[in-house]
Image: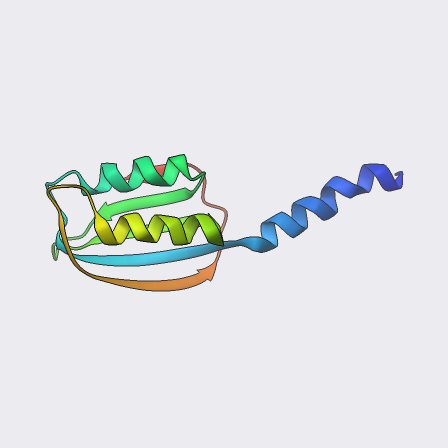
Length: 106
């Protein structure tokens, strides 16, 4: 294989290494106010993968993967929420990306 043919592998490996994951537990009035769709829209606009899921205790879990800058921007939206939401607290755990695809709501 030529050196030129091996370059994309190096670039892909470097790009993948820069991808990270956040898991954010969002507490407040965040269910039945369009919160998950709001997060999904912003995540997709930022090119992130993951999900937003209602939890039985009233919180929303947001898991997103992608570039750190995009994740930090998403966290600004997560903390603000849509018009009818009232975000009281957001606990964030950073980790390594696991290969999520698409952004889904549950």
